[in-house]
Length: 360
Image 1 (cartoon, rainbow, N blue to C red):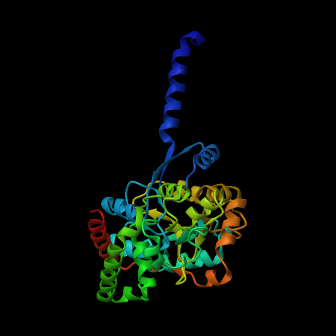
Image 2 (image 1 turned 180 degrees about the vertical axis):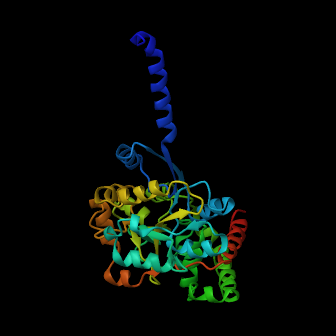
């Protein structure tokens, strides 16, 4: 038998090889999500529970998610979080997602109405492509001490607020303005010629509105700065941003537009060429636990798509929701409709036209 001292180098090499092999076998979960849905603390807690999984996060938005996955045919990411209306049409047009195995998801924790709604929106040929994560609305917010009567998308362009309002040049403002003009853009999805006519009218309205706009916001932090500084007194917004502001200044409140706030549900969806499905399912089940729902809602301001989601929000966010919505407002919600193939290109061209005309 060889002496122990003779064997030590061999044992050390074997240990190093085993360690390197273990590290090499660690799985990476590549998450394509919104900026507030994967806080560092949540990632740390997940990786502590699953030390064989590393979480790699790319923050994005709906348009960029679809564009990234379209460019790669659904490769590069293992779990994406598009809104519920960005799955069906994108899948039919670009084939960038794959069906989910619901048996691997704790759907019993999810709000039944939100789960059923997302399943209805994202079922293709009998296969379900998404489940819900968080939900909220897009609408308006105002400093009620300075704009007490602010209640309509059209008020963003009211001359009495000249130079004091804000909006984001994305599809939400197109839809909201269309509703304010007495149109139903979602119904017009069935007639794209009609929808183009609506978009042309909306573009003219928003171009004429440019002198009212203090700044076009890009993200929630931009908008919060505008409102807290008083540079803007009213804006188009995600309700979650308004809820965050409410905790700092209770005079700034979310305002459901009189035509109805636009409701969205952000989902969990598997990219077609993702390589870590099991890790993705573990993440879904982990972040839908009550403790984690509270952490993420505190960070995002949105409501977890679980049973009792509002009750799981931190106290300040829950108070903001209760201050913003009446039962009538909830009944008047306009859920984003599935986007048919071709509509995003139409909207994109309209937005480019508005940007070109308002940048001068």
